[in-house]
Length: 161
Image 1 (cartoon, rainbow, N blue to C red):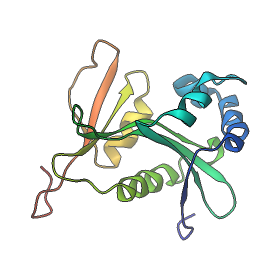
Image 2 (cartoon, helix red, strand yellow):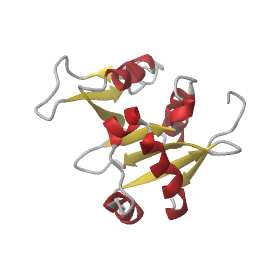
Image 3 (cartoon, rainbow, N blue to C red):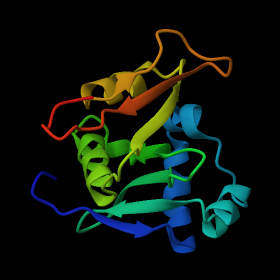
Image 4 (cartoon, rainbow, N blue to C red):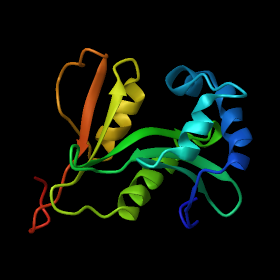
């Protein structure tokens, strides 16, 4: 996996069956599911203009799926809505590689940042973000039982904010 190039493509209807099959995994289903056969999620992501849903491939297979919202005047941050790694590829560095490539794919402009939120019942996701340099914005979950995270913006000297 280390030497393979990641290919980000806009999620297509033909990616759905593969992605849906990942939800047979109890852990993925518990945190991102359920995903039904005629799930309205597919129509939503195919018509949403406020962000993009990516299918991520290596040379041979779809290995991850990630959704983001684009910055706008009201909310000047890229926002990761979901990140799923193909269940058999977990704990192999795939998620970190995907996250780094995603951030490099969308360079930040002045005032922008990367943000996401993680359910308090998902400590593995929180640990993953922290391992990858994301900073928790609060020590307690919000009213929706979520922890907010931000990836530090770099200043002109290359240091964290």
